[in-house]
Image (tube, rainbow, N blue to C red):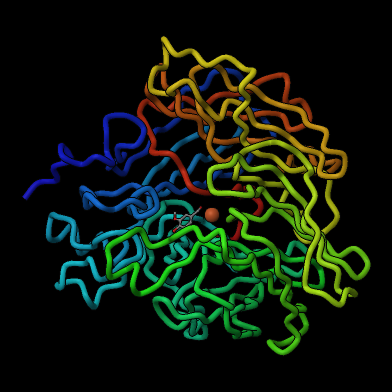
Length: 473
Ligand code: V55
Ligand code: FE
């Protein structure tokens, strides 16, 4: 049997076709100059289906096999390595030389031969904690990979103490204590309404778990932490057994469902949870949250409806109030749904976040880059979350940018002293490149662009690890 993508409508020629190989490029081609003080590694994930998808896999973009990209910087040069996560699922499919797992998060569509094989595709995010590099997908447990070679080390259940059947791809690492606050939803198996929040110490051992029920089976893609609280929103992308049986996409946007937000004191238990309620909102990712007196402020990209561009908003939860509503204010009209920050300021007062943005006032070269369809995430914006002031980096008229990450400079002087970086699809060259921007001089353009000699599929999420962070790996 061979992998035949010719009939796969989700793999047209171009950036959506899978990369499909493991490999390295030593001493990548660079235009501009890589800063001499940039020592560390940018890791990012992409969903890279190794076998053709089923025709009705609407969520195929999120159902691909996890593939890690690693850009390692040292003394002004950079090496790239990309490698599949060898999940049980990919191992089984490679052995059969064909697709065995069906559509996104629907085991009813799987080949019966894989009924007892883990479905986790390890395709969403990558986090370093307690000396382990975890690759995450919210429907299953983490896989571990070697942070230097990207070799897969198998699944990880925190010494058997993580009893949730899944761990979300968006844990939070407390920059003060080194604890990892993580959680699973549908935590007692597919479609269960259980949420389990875990605190894992810097030694990798579970310190605490808190179990409670979601008000409905909606997506719980991300959380936020403050010094004192954990904020756990349940969003009105809902699912049910009927949907899975009907073969419709797993998630269904329900504008009539409320946004339900659980606030759990970090030193508390399930009975201390306070629920807040708001109108249905289309949002998956939360940037930062802080305690301000007896209120909690959480900043997030959010749109009112599924087809509206997102804005960066601030939700305020007043723990003194008697009712369960929360306040919503617009911080910025920056429209990218992936907002990042200097994670050393997570849970604490902060000033800046970084997001991709489709800036309609910038040119898109439809002749040289017809694949862009006249629209691109053509800028990264640095947004001051207190004033709404923005500064922006324009990537060019033939590229579209993916999630930005922030890499602090060694011995950084202040919060935004560092680099913003992310992968861009270059539609004129039909190759991928990594751009590096000075966060305090966004308008100056890229300091360096790392040019790969091939395409990467668009990424999901990534993280920066300094050489010091990885010293003990
Ligand atoms: C997202 C990504 C997923 C997923 C659910 O970033 C939500 C959004 C890559 O997989 O399963
Ligand atoms: Fe995400």
